[in-house]
Amino acid sequence: MTLMKTQLIILLVLITVSRPASAQIRATDIVGVWLSEEQDGKVEIYQQGERFFGKLIWGKEMYEQDGVTSKKDVANPDANLAKRPLKDLVILNGFVFEDGQWLEGTIYDPQSGKTYKCEMKLSGDKLHIRGYIGITLFGRTTVWTRTKR
Image 1 (tube, rainbow, N blue to C red):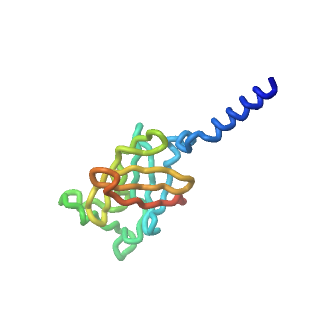
Image 2: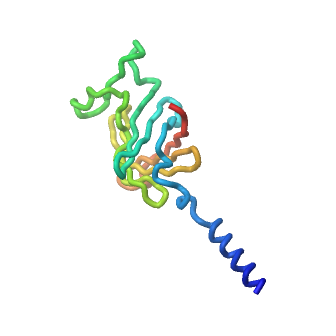
Image 3: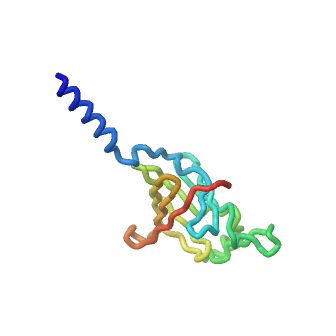
């Protein structure tokens, strides 16, 4: 009996320890402020309904020389959208949480005016963001760090 109990305890410990990290990640763990890899921008990620979005709240190149007036989204190919300010511009759109990842979203690059499909994965205080065209193989990953506003 004692051997069986010991084996059962070992089995339970192994099952608990071997759980994937995604089982420990909650959908709202992504909510907060993130500093870009280049440390030249901050994005606030928030939840709206079942989806997640992110808006640009600070950037080194965000303001005109007066330091108050937000620059515009001039690289956007849509003339109407090119007039919108960069401050509070939503650049992460429509992510859903599934199996420890945020999927089905897009990321907008205000420097190029291009939008890419995107997936995000959280690892501690690091957010791995992969923007891509078509399939994830054709993309680039950047790593953002959780920060304060």
